Length: 243
Image (tube, rainbow, N blue to C red):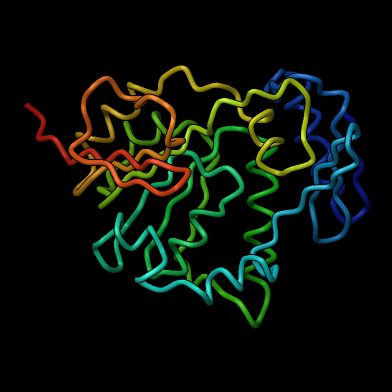
C-alpha cells in the first residue's frame, strides 16, 4: 500500500511502516489502496475506482441528517430509549451511527480494531472538535483495539452495547461506495458470539445487534425482541445477570 505523507504529517510514517512490517494491516489487495496525509486531512484512495474516502462529520450530509432527527422518524429513539445514556459501539467503522447517537445526547465510546479505519476516524474526530461551529462536547470517544478485550478489562458499565458486524457482501470487486470499502477493510470477526455473550452480561440495559432484515440472527439465542425497518433488523438482548 502506498503512503503519501506531507511534511506536516511526517510523524505518521514510522507508525504506518511499523504496521505494514508487522502485518498489522491485514486486508486483501493492499496494492490498490493509497493512504494520503495532506495537511489536516487523512484520506484513503481506492485505485480501482479512484474513490477517495474522507470521514467528515461537519459535512452537510451529516449535519442535515442531525437537523432532521426527531422522535417520529429516527429509529434510534425506539431502540435507545434511555435519555443521556452511555453506549459502547463495539464496531465503530466510519462512525456514522455513533455520530448520530451522540447528536441525540448520548455519550458514545467507539472501539475500532482496524488500524486504517481508526486513523481515518480519529482524524475526523480531531477536525470535527477543532471547528468552532460544531462540537461533540466530549460525547464521542474513540479507542483502537479489540472490543472483546475492552469489555473484559473495562470497569465502566455501559447502558447499551451496539454491534454492527457489517452485512455479507455478494460483490467480489470493490465498489466506489464507502461502505463497500469498509467491508473490505474490516476483517470478518471470529469472536462474534463471545463478544455478544459478554456484552449481554456486562451492560446495564441491553445489547443491540444491527443486521440486514433478510439475514439470520447472529447470536445463537433468541432475541428478547426485534425492531424492523424496511432494510434492517435490530435484535435486542436484555441484560442477563451473571450466575
